[in-house]
Image (cartoon, rainbow, N blue to C red; front, side, top):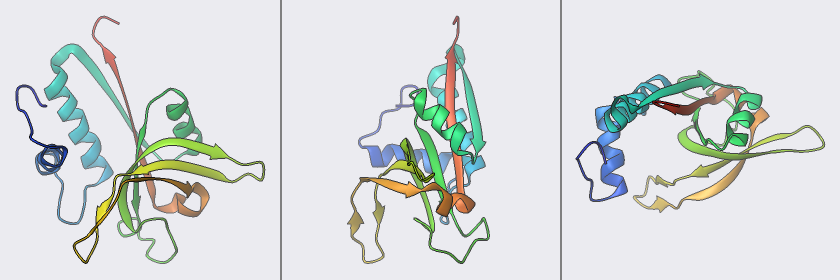
Length: 153
């Protein structure tokens, strides 16, 4: 819900946000996502909170956000990062970072919730949790962290 506007479904709400905050047929940039999220929260919360957003690509910052109980938006984008060659988890896709794993051998894993996607044949890939090798995908990742401070705190 934005202000007093109600949506009949999650999809309707997401489509509204995508259209209002500069989503394009080829996707949404991390900058557009961050500024759209900030505007959305400002619309929803009014002046009752200060919204803090950071864009980064750093496993230790990601870990700090997860440890603080704040999920992180994780964008995979080989096209606009000009990394066309390589086997990445996604060519272009937004996910929600919900956890991590650090192995004894030094591998760093992002645990993300992939909320599904439409397939070329019209079908739909269901939502699922995935473990993503951070090192193998680092070159195409942008992360967006969100925090806010309620007025009077």
